[in-house]
Length: 534
Image (cartoon, rainbow, N blue to C red; front, side):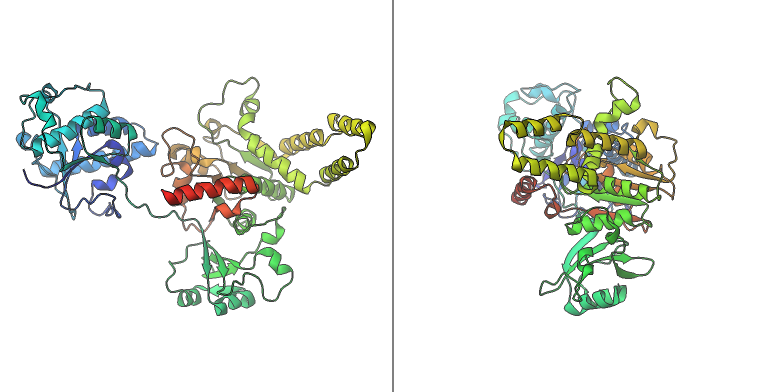
């Protein structure tokens, strides 16, 4: 046979990069694939098709959707190609591909093939069947028969240099290695996810115009920044000048409200200053925090999507704003839907009691908000610290310890205030109990949204009315749910769906926005180093 290279693709590769099977007018060219496919033959084992058929039953997962798309495209190509069983079993029946620079073929494994091999995986062993397909391709490339009539020792003499198994499954990679099959990972560059923010240097004149006139018309921005991508509705711009200026040259109180951050207002077609940050109920210390707080307080935003690493205040700021806006009368309550997998659990008590462990992050955020803003708690803390510094002798120590152990303690008072705040404003719902509901005048917090699949995401996003506000928070690098990853979870789905929507704000925290302190920052820095090295 020719020296044309053959790539045998595993199921996970097809699901992750379904455009390996192109469809005219629908699919996009693969962007910088890690393996050069031009002029090659891409082989889809029949075992992979069987596995795709099983996975398509997962209608609301990304695996199910990818499997459905792949099978649909394959069926259309197969109908056009026609069949010849002799050519099918010889890798000589390519599917017709429009505007594609490689051949695509489907390869079954002969029922007697394992008779000439030193091993025989079962029909239900999908990884074993894919290894068999790769070995089938190797035999065919060497001009050998695959009907089981070759001698068993032949496998040790074959040239394997022109066949490669492409998979991202580490288990399959190990099994392929054990059977002498060349293998490789397959990756394509995935476009960077839209974050809703840009941190960039702008000309001094443009910066001064923004400070003095309070706006930048889109035409002026495009003329001054010709190399920047087009502005997206509600995109935030963190601007710096070549000399490092980030403040209002007029000085004064405006510097407290992040004057160097603008937002592209689609309706006005211009970049405007932050308008609501001055009403923040808590102190804002980072640019990411300012963008998020502005979005939470802006009544025109019906949906706020916030992503980023732990410790940046995603849940804390949402909870703080929820309490503040309820106190102002803008909402009549807060709806919390714990974004966890599985049922409500088996803990004793009613539904609220069963869900209580899952809403602890919200209650912890309420506690932190009270520590920062409640005068009674602040007074108790100051007194506690003062007594600690002035403790002299066992009598003073005993008095301080007794106070902290009693109902007068800070902990006891905090727990009382947290429970009062929760009972007054907050209600928690399990995801199974929100179907069919329509929430009005509610501030809705959907925390850890990366642990939702696409079906759950659709269910939750479509609950509110226009007089409510929804906040989705999470970290796509910390997906805990089975079968979900950083690309196919509900949070990523929502980010892609609502990009550029005029009633939606997209916020993203960076490692530099960490608020928990030096320990968390150290962890985030180490993670960043590891990502850079890999």
